[in-house]
Every structure is written in C-alpha cells, then in structure tokens.
Image 1: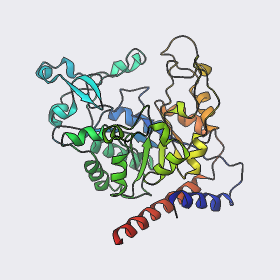
Image 2: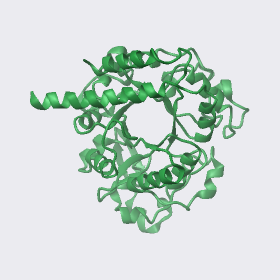
Image 3: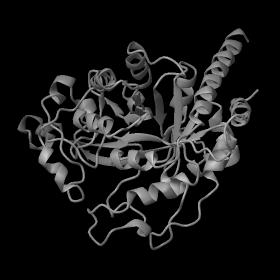
Length: 383
C-alpha cells in the first residue's frame, strides 16, 4: 500500500469519529525565529519565537570550514553579520558561484567555527525592520547544537514540546566542496533524541536528491520545499522537471515517495493579480492532501511590503498591516501549518480557530507513516 493510501485510510477512519465541522489548528512555525522582531537566526530570535507560542522553530543550516553546522539563511554572511567591518577578514571576501548564481561576499565554509564566533549578527533588511537594528552587534552566530540546547531548555521551562525544522541550504554545493550536510545534520538530531517519525523534528530542503538520500537513512519526517524554476540538483542532473511539475498530481505522488510534507511559496496556494490583490486559491492544498502530504507554506511577514494589497495598512512599506486577515484567508484553504516572521500574530490567529479535534488524526497518521517507512525499508533490505 502506498503511503498516500495509508494516510487517506487513516484520515477516513479517524474522521468518522470527529464532528464534520471540526477544524484542525495549523502549526505555527517561527521562520528563522521571530525575525520580525530580532535579527534572524539568532538565539534571541528563536527564544522569542518560542515565547510567542511557536510550535516549531526553523534553523537554516550551513557548514563551517571545520564541518560544524551553524544557523544562517545563506552561506554568504556579509548581509547578516559584521564580517565586512572586521579588518582581519577583509582578505576573505571572494566571488563564488552558488547554485548557478555568482555571489561576492564572505562565506561560512571559509571560516572555522572559532572565527565565526568572533562575529556578531545584524539585521538583514534594516530599511523594513529598523527596530531590529538596535540589536545589531549583540548576538553570536549560533551552532545547530546551540539551537537544540535552547529548545531543550525552553521545553523544561514551559512544559511543552517545541519542534525543530532545520533546512539544508545548498546541499549539492556543500557536497561538491567536501562538506556534505546530511549526515552531520542527522548526527546532531540523533544525538539529541530526534530519531523517528513521531519525534518533534522535520528536515526540509529545496532539493530533491538529498531528501531521497535522507529517506533511506532516517524515519524523521521530510519536507519538500518549492521555489521558482527547478530544484538545483535537477539542473545538475539534467532532469527537466520544474517545481511546478512537482506540484501537479503526478509530481505530488512522486514527492510522496520520500516526503511527508510540502512547503510551497504561499503564492502557489493563493496567487496575486498584477496589483497585488489575492486571486482565487489554486488546488495545491487539496491535491497535496489527496496525495497524503501535509502543506506548510512560507513566508508570512507582517510588513506592508510583503502583504497582499488586500491587507496593507497604508503606504509605509515597513508598517504592519493586517497579518491575521491574510492568515485567515489561507486557513480557509486547509493548510496544515505556516512559516511566519511574527509568531505572536500567528499564534493569536490560530487561537481564534475553533478547538480542533483532528490533531489526534494527524498524530495517528504520522505514526502510520513512520511504521510504513520502517516496513518499506525492511522489505527493501530483504529484497
């Protein structure tokens, strides 16, 4: 039986025991932490996201020169740290081609962890988040282990499970320079007790091959991310399929073979017209659910610059608009979670949704997924 059939059968079984009007509350995922309020990918941003009620926090992971995974959105760190102002590192500026794009800057793989620990984080988009600039120079670049340590500490303090959803950044590139991310990521997660499909961990990637590789190594849940164009490993291998192809029913069935969730850009779920107003939703959510996949779109940001025209509060691009109204529009499509820069607004919106009785269905469904994965690997090993 395919995993999609297992999930659908589980949904049908449990749905028969819950009211038809019940609505599952979507998961709140702190995107790079609470990055609307603190510089992204800092322990301060992650802690604030947890304090604001995030169910999961999202560290993007890249590698240092000495093979330690750290939390940065990109391996180029000129825009998110003070490295450009450190005379000692002036000679490290260089130009590299990352996923087919020429980039000039400073790159994590050219620094040891001890060197990176001398740097301090800064706000990536100061024009839109001027309040965050007051924290420039205050916070270190954290390792993935330090992020996990924070999660464990906060779990003990507040008495609830906090999920972690790391993303492998540029996995083909890092593999090409002898610093593959996958096993290092699994080593950190496994060492800290994240080992199976029922645990509070999800691994995500914009590439396909490394998720397929991870699918053969772990029962930790996997999420296929979607962007524009093609997965870069498809570009390298000559595979002509695009992200749009992977959102078709056939493509989603393919993704279902190695992943349990998809993370599309939110415009793939509700597009906008030329003036920035929301159009009718696509069938992405229903198609994904039919394939047995959960849907967690990205990225919900509260500033007018990022909101649909429907929900902007004025002309100031940095001012907050009606983030909650945007979220409610997406909730109607049936999304299962969402990446958000302001977790407090996400939590308040989710809390306004009627008490769910379908989370139990999802938990049971994930248990079936984990069991099916283990059975499938056992059968493969015996073949």
